[in-house]
Each structure stands twice: as C-alpha cells, then as structure tokens.
Amino acid sequence: MPAPMFSIIIPTLNVASALGFCLDSIACQTFRDFELVLVDGGSTDATLDIAHSFVPNFGERLVVRSAPTAGSTTR
Image 1 (tube, rainbow, N blue to C red):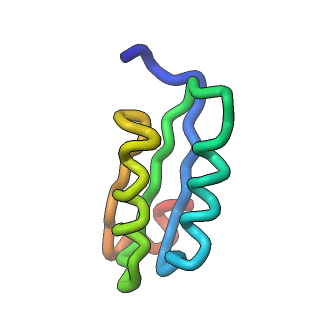
Image 2 (image 1 turned 90 degrees about the vertical axis):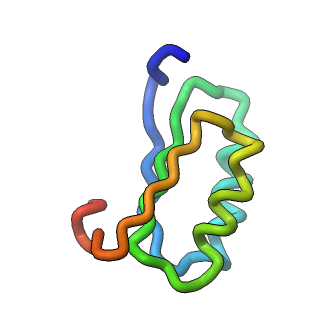
C-alpha cells in the first residue's frame, strides 16, 4: 500500500459517547487517500472497543495505539 496523502490523528480519552459519530463522519468521506491514527490515553470506557469496531470501515488505514500514560505526548 503506498503512503497516504495525509494523516488524521485523533487523541482520545474516555470519549466513547462521541467517537462513533466522529469515525462515522470520516468513514463517509469520498476521498480515501489518508490514514487514521487514533491514540488513546488509557480510556476506561468503551472507547477502544468502538475504535476497533471501525476496522472493517478503514482496514489498514486505521491505526489504533493505546498508551495509558500518554497524557500530553499526543498533542
């Protein structure tokens, strides 16, 4: 797979209530030459479950990283 034109980076922490809407919006885009990088800071809700449920929509273009002590390093 060639390198994507750009990356969308989403830092998350306990945002299960909003993440589905965010990822649905991105999945509906017709331009597909991007990668989606989701960096989680140690969520204790369903954030990671929701992120992983979108793998069929994005395939190899979705990268999910979980770093419990990420804090401000994702900024």
